Length: 303
Image (cartoon, rainbow, N blue to C red; front, side, top):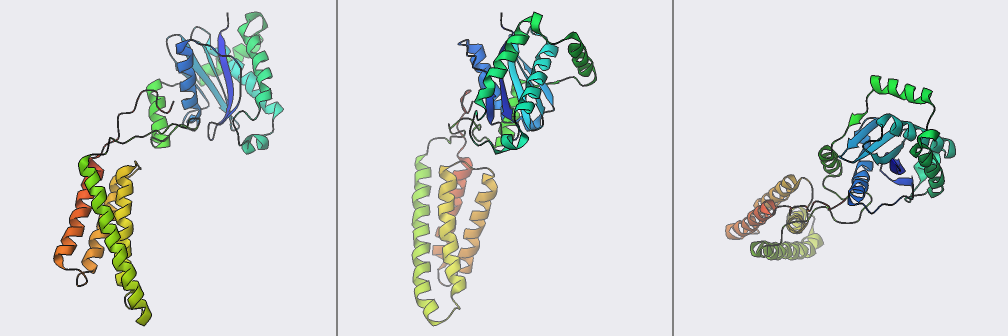
C-alpha cells in the first residue's frame, strides 16, 4: 500500500510548480489536500524550513532550501521522519540535476516535468520499507527532529497567511477572482449617475476654461487644474464603488478631500449652491462605497 501519495517540487519565491509526480487519486480528501497544497506553495516564504500540516488521514510535509521546496502528501500514519528523509533525498536529487539559475529563470509551470520520473522512482523506494533509506540516515533525521522539530501548520493558519500575503487576491495557480462585492444597489446606481454627471460638468468647464484662458495668459492654470482634478476624482469614486481594492477608506478619503478643496478653490466661478451640490454628491458616493461590503467568500474560491 502506498504511504506517500503525491510529491512535487515548487519554487519558493512565488509557488511556481516545477515538477510533480503523476499520481492521481479520486478520493475527495486527497483532492482537498491537493488544493491546500497549492495554497501552501504560494506562502512558503512565511514558514520555516520544515513543516507539517496534519489532518485525520492525510498530512502535507514540506522541506525548503536553496530557493526550492519539496512537498508531499502522505498518510498520517506514515512516520514524519521517513517523510522528511524522502523530501531531503528528493531535494538533493533535484539540486544535482538543475542549476539554481535555470530554476530562477523558469517562467512556466512544470518547466522540469522530466524530473517526474525521478520523483516516481524515489517515491516507490520509500513506499516499500525494504528499499527505504539506511538506518543511519533515519537516525540522523531523528536527532535533527529532536533539535529542530518541524513546524506544525494548521489549515486555518495557512488560509489566514494566504489572505494576508495576497491581500484577498487570487492564488497564483488559479484564475478565479478572489473578491466579489455585494450586488449594486439602486442608491449605488444613483451615486454612479451623479458622479458621472459631476465629472462631465467638471471636464466641460475645465476644457472651456483652457480654450479661452491659455490663449491670453497662463493665470487660469490653477482654475483649470481645479476643474480637472474633480473630474478624475469623480471617476475614481465610480471605480472604487464598482471594484474592490485594498485601503478603500484611505483612497475614498483622499478623493473626497480633493473634491472638497477644489470646489472651495473654485468659489467665484461657482456659486455656493453649485459647490454644495458637488460636495453633497461626493459625500453620498463616499458613503455608498464604504457601506458596500465584500460578498461572502465561498469555501473553495481561489483554491
